[in-house]
Length: 125
Image 1: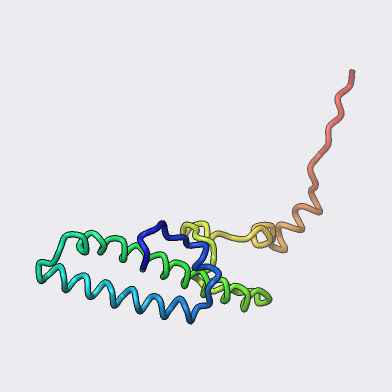
Image 2 (image 1 turned 90 degrees about the vertical axis):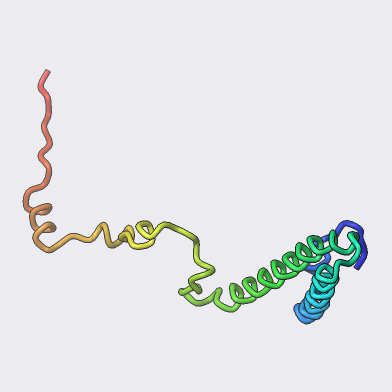
């Protein structure tokens, strides 16, 4: 792996299979670097551990993005989204009544509204 700046944009263009292969290579490299660390290897390789870990995180992020996007496309026509794709809200907001549920009235309330409408008053000048 080259030491130049790593572009995530290139990862997004790759296929998931290629990403998984590269991820396995990176994980293998990380294992090698950790064994060098234990055996008191040179300091140059020790500094590379952080870079490899960050690169692994970027790969995993792109893989998860692609999986989420594919699930979104697959469930686009259905009414229910998977829980992890729904908007993050507080428990109270998720459980509160919908607008139509709030607007519903009992039969007794409807009778009172219809039989005793609000009175309109006109002022004389």
